[in-house]
Length: 207
Image (cartoon, rainbow, N blue to C red; front, side, top):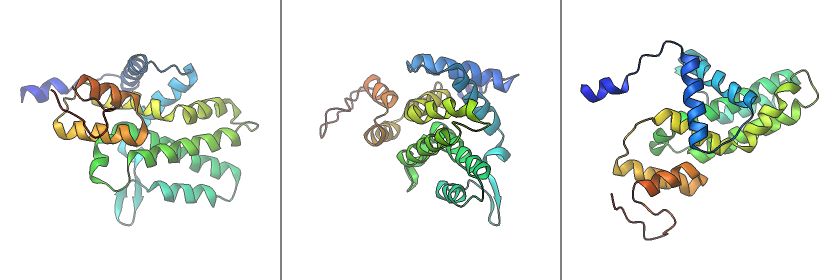
C-alpha cells in the first residue's frame, strides 16, 4: 500500500506536468530539439492522456487501430488533407505507444522497432508533404520528429517509467530493445544495472 501511494502523484495541470517531465527527460537524454517540437510533443501527451483520443471505436469495441490500417488510410486518402491527417495520426500514435508502452511489447508479435519505423516514416512523409502548404509551419517539427524518433522514444520512456524498478525480466527486455533499436537510453540503463550489452554472447548480470 505504501509503495503504491508513493507512485500516485496529484497533478493539478496535466499539460504542465508533461511539460516539466518531458523537458527533464530531454535534458537527461542529452537530446536537443526545437522549442516548437517540444511543444508539439507536450500537446500530444496531454491529448493522448485521454483514452478516447488514443483509441478508436470499432465493431469489436474500443481498440487501438493497427498501424498498417492507418498507413492504408493515408495511401487511399481521397485528397492531400486527408492523407496528411492520416499520416499525422500514424506518427503520433506510433510515438506515444512506443514511448509509453514499450514494456508491453514483450508479449506481442509487433515490436518497438516496427513502431519506430512506421512513425518515423510517417513524420518524414508528412514533413515533405507540408513544405509548401498551409501547414508548412509544422514541416520543421515533423522533419525533426522523423530524424530523432528513436531518441524521442527514449525520452518518453523516461517520462513513463519515472522511478520504476527493473526486474530481471525487464533487464532482458531492455537488452532486446537495445538490440532491435540501438536505444542509447536502454544501453545506459543496462550499464547502470550491471549488464554489459556489448559483450555479445557473454552478457553477465552483476546486480
